[in-house]
Length: 135
Image (tube, rainbow, N blue to C red; front, side):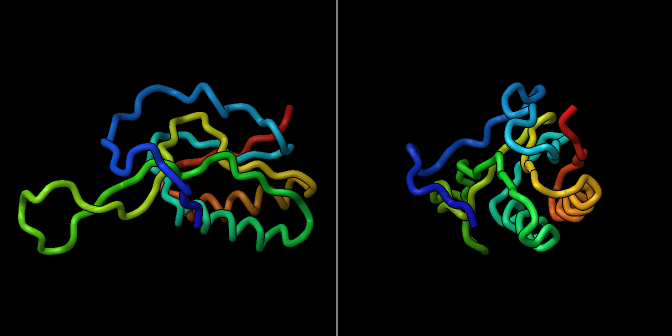
């Protein structure tokens, strides 16, 4: 799974996600991409699950780029812990995506194979996605 080696602050605030993505909204590396259509947090387990589905589908045929990295820590308090006592410990890391962000790119395979791989990977993600190609 993807985890940051070091973060500036151990515990972060939640923050709010608004608007559309301005960075990472164009294909930069491959000919095919998977674009996000709604705002959500994607955790490292979901990214890894989608990556494994794509790799298993394309086998040794193409090259995959992962355009996101989970850098935001999410905390959780233990079960049956009473109110108070401060913020919990870091449980996992997420990447907050906005609509328009490309999360995976693929090259070196035919379009139908890429479309099938991204369709299977989209099932593993908690957001609506769209298959895009280089125009």
